[in-house]
Structure formats: structure tokens, C-alpha cells
Length: 318
Image (tube, rainbow, N blue to C red; front, side, top):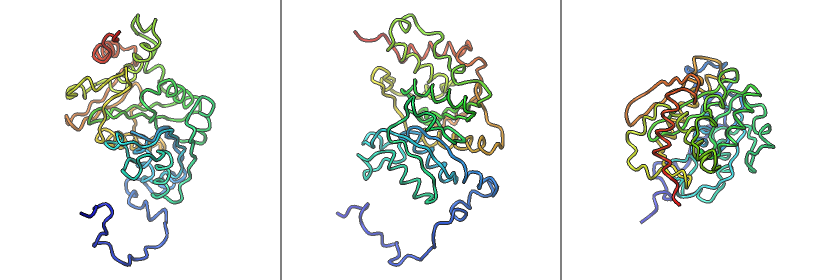
């Protein structure tokens, strides 16, 4: 039996019509109405930094490209593998084993042949954070959930450089969103990574790191709507650095992050910035607007942290 992926499509004309060369204004003309022509031109001349192109990062980048953003500074160290297939924008049978960075870069150029790309195949490190953020109008957080030390440094540098930053986490079949204004509450103040940790965390650096990951999860998603339908808590394993995810959560995260991202770049409309956030869950058909004055120091934040820590971090096996 012929493979439908390689079989000829009888609906494709033998001699397709000549539709002419790529023209930016034709390609993104359907955006007009939701943005003005002047705003579309502003997006054309904007640059965004996206670190990590696997989960949300690939979808963020491709969505922004279809919105007409003209410049990207992107990085990833990984290749596509079969377990990426359930959720990652660039994961196909044809791309398994290929660099995520090269694959997404090619797709961005296929959407907009005029796109300006700055690729960082060596990854983001302390010494090249400025290179990664150079000239950017927006940082879209898409680092691996466990890259916490680097994430903290990138957000801190965004604040110093005056670059707005957004993070949208896929939570089950929904997304939880936060934005950080360079003149508002900082990433560090909001998450309070070093406050309220257990006595064991004070003694054990590994436990400290795991508890800080729990703080990140709770801070991004204070409402924790997704906890009501997680069927197997054992699939969240912070000892092995594994968490479940769905393409539904990824695509919702891209929509929410990119909508708010262009609002920040265009300076149009209200964007909820930390300590305010929002969480939408398609499975439960529920949206919660969150507000945690004081961030991780808020009593509700501390209570949620202790509750989730007890769920996800049982006593370490000996």
C-alpha cells in the first residue's frame, strides 16, 4: 500500500499557477484589521528573542512569524526525538534527529523569506546573554522548566536592559501566563525563590533546586486549575526531571503569549503584568485572573507552595 505521505496528490495541478514572488504586505495582509498598517510595519521591524525551541518556544516563534515579526534571535541545543511528537511545533518523522534550531530557522524563513535571523547554536550562557537579547523588543521565555538558574539570569538582564518579558506555561490542557514590565515587579521578587524553603532544602542543594522548581510552577500557575484532572501524579517526577504536557497546552500558551507580546511591543491595550496573571483551561472551560501582591511572599502563595511540594516531592528514596 502506498504511503499517503509520499503518494502524489491528484488534486494538485500538474502545472500550478505562477503566483509571483513573496511580498511581505501580501503575505500578512490578513492581519490588517486586527492591527493597523502602521502597526504591521512596526512588527516587521521588531526583533524578539526566543530561548529554547522545543515545547512552547517553537510555537511562539512560528506564531510571531505569521504575525509578521521580522527579526528573531533564537537558540536551542537539542535535536528532535520521538517523544517530542505529541507537542512540539517542529517535530515530524522527517525531522527526528535534526537540530531544533536549524529546523525552526528554516520554517521561519519559509513563512517569511525576508526574516532576519540570529542563530545561537551553542546555547545561551552567562557570557552571551547580552548577545541573545541584543536589539530585542521582547523576550519570550521558553527555556526548559529545569533551566532555572539561566532563566533567572535572563529575566534579570531583561529588566536591566528595559526589555519586557513574557512567560506562558502549558498546564495540562490550558496555559498560565505572566508578563514582566521592566519597571514593575521583578521576576525575583515575584517568585521569591529563596524564601519559605524547607530545612532539608537548606542542607541539600538538590532538594533546594527541586523546591525552587515547585515555586516556579506555583508562581506561574497560582490557580492550579490543572490539578483537578491530572490522572497520574506519578508522571510528574522532579527527581527524574520529567513532567507531562499536551499540544493543547502548548498552542494555547503560544496564543496567549503572542497576543500579549504584540500588545507590549505595540503599546496597545492592557496587559496583565506581575503580580497579576491569568490562567485559562480549555478542559475545564475556566479562566482565572490571578493576583498575588508580594508574589511568593503572599500567604496564599506560601500555602500553595507547601501543598504542591508535599504532592510532588515526597521524601527522597534512600
